[in-house]
Image (cartoon, rainbow, N blue to C red):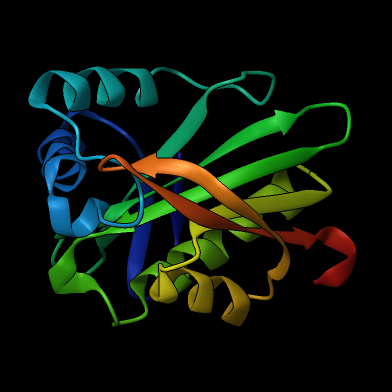
Length: 175
């Protein structure tokens, strides 16, 4: 499966995405607002879990590598997980390598995922959770039409420190 825009294409995870996924998952700077950096063993296991075959009735993540169309450079990853099949709700999350941040790639990838979720999967809502201190992520979500629906105090443990998380949602009726 491939989703594409003028500058990027999203392709379902395959072995070519392994190195960047592991690098991002183990990087303290990238993981600062996501979760405690993983060990190589943990990152390998997470990649294997996220690159299994996916169908819309799965309870697992559908992960895409974000690739520059012109050069094929690996830029990051984005995924969706249907969290409530009956209510037609999915969650999304993304990671972009530091050298590709601030260039609009995450916004383009999120736009492609939104279109896939609402137009192809016919879901009703897309949600996202991000650390309250992750300014880049929450500004991107808000710019992409997501509404902040709440704040969960001390919701996530990152590097032995509890952090607050913002909850975001985007309903089909809001696009």
